[in-house]
Length: 404
Image (cartoon, rainbow, N blue to C red; front, side):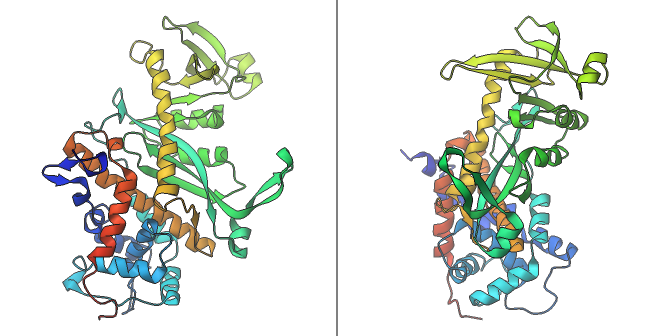
């Protein structure tokens, strides 16, 4: 019987459905050319490394960390042989030529490509993707190490240690902070903002919440809760289910039959006393027995019949899906070599969004395969998928790297 990673789908192994040709359907060349043209970064004259090929190269970097830049390009050109116009072939280039080609492109077209292409992909058949017809998404943040160069250190900054626990000084690497919206049912990371490390997640959260939509139910940890952030989500028309701090002050107005309560939050103590500009929320409190820890949830889902407290408490646990998605992004795509190799901020950001695009492509293939097999997407192995892509990129090459 085939394992999860090798599960047969309509007569084929899951691994047979994964190749760079298949992945290119999720990131089509036409979209790349359009983004390059719009950003005026397209190739205007004959070059050894055309801009659209370099975009695919930047994405391919997400699958390989230890390989040299020239080796990754050789793998890629082999896999793209049948996708290039008229079967055209491009010789591999030296490291400096690759770096110059990436610098010419910059970060903007790769960010634009991510913003245009990477969207939620769940359907009504995707297991665990919806609650009461609302798309389940999680907002959360993380950080990633960047190559330790003077430019990167100046731009991103390093973590400072003030002596707590006997540790004082700064981290070994500069750090990029980022915050994302993640689709629960598919683990697609579809909205992302980044910053230097000193910018807090709460600040980035206000930016990211501007991107939520009315068809979403947004899960978030207690770090993000405030009157200001809650109002942004409410004004966008999204439903919210957030954990709040134990000392968060709410004015209880009514207790509901399922043990939850209706309450109001206010922008200030003065407005609370005057009962002005309050927003009604529903408060749910429960304990996790294993941890003996009190959880307090606030939600915009006020109807206890349509959304029972017990269901919402169980639903909130889906927030931890972000840990799996970020682990895939930072560890499994790069076999636990968790840092960006690029030596300048512009190229580090470019590399990061290429990594996001690579993750999206793999997750897209896995979602299609899961639907065909009538399986939840998380039943398929992300690690196996990455390994298949690496192997097939290496074996696709059918011509000499020096052939023109």
